[in-house]
Amino acid sequence: MGFNFDQYEKIKAQLPREVLLLPVSKTKPISDLMEAYNHGVKVFGENYVQELLAKAEEMPKDMEWHFIGHLQSNKVKYIAPFVKMIHGVDSFSLLKEIAKQARKQGRVIEVLLQFHIATEESKFGWSPEDLDEIAVELKNNTFEGVEICGVMGMASFVDDEQTIRKEFRQLKQCFDVLQPLLSERFRIISMGMSGDWPMAVEEGSNLIRLGSVLFGSRN
Ligand SMILES: *Cc1c(COP(=O)(O)O)cnc(C)c1O
Image 1: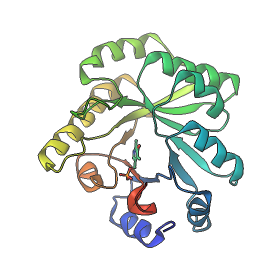
Image 2: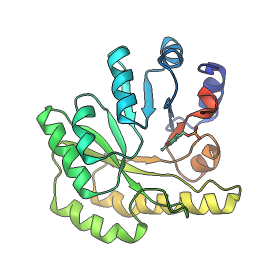
Image 3: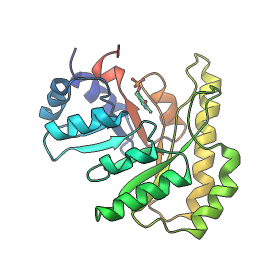
Image 4: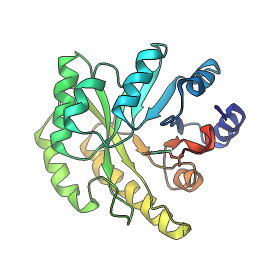
């Protein structure tokens, strides 16, 4: 199907100015991404390290890559030389590894703290109950090499709007608790996907991650 630029423009036109639209290109061929690129879209989100490396290698160097999948500590070194933002940081050991690899590269990598807001078991992330512990860690460490920019989460895959809203609200609350502890650089709430982004924006998201609605459904 390729990249649906009309849809991209249509959604962008509906978004408040401060909301960023991140196209999620996982599993899609480079030709689809190049279509988007040729329309001026130069920021993409990817979920798998190997796939991201292959795409980053082949594609123009002025692209901005966001890693939005689950990242294992031993793979951080591969993406540290170029990745702009890592959304799914869900442990301090991972955060420390990202910071270390970023320093090695003489870079600063932007990161988001992932919270588990869905009821489903399989999703990664901190629990809102961990907020006190997170606050202590953030006070005691500088994590030089990373810029902690905000929070990220995924709502449950359910039809019930109230459940989804409640989960988005929970993520917004986590953001509000941590925000005063960090600087004004802590500013991003990454929530909302193809099926639920309008609600996410209503609940305070300022970064939505859209895959299938732009690139067509994945196999
Ligand atoms: C795949 C994925 C998306 C995009 O999902 P769509 O429903 O296709 O928009 C967004 N965020 C994360 C973390 C993903 O893994």
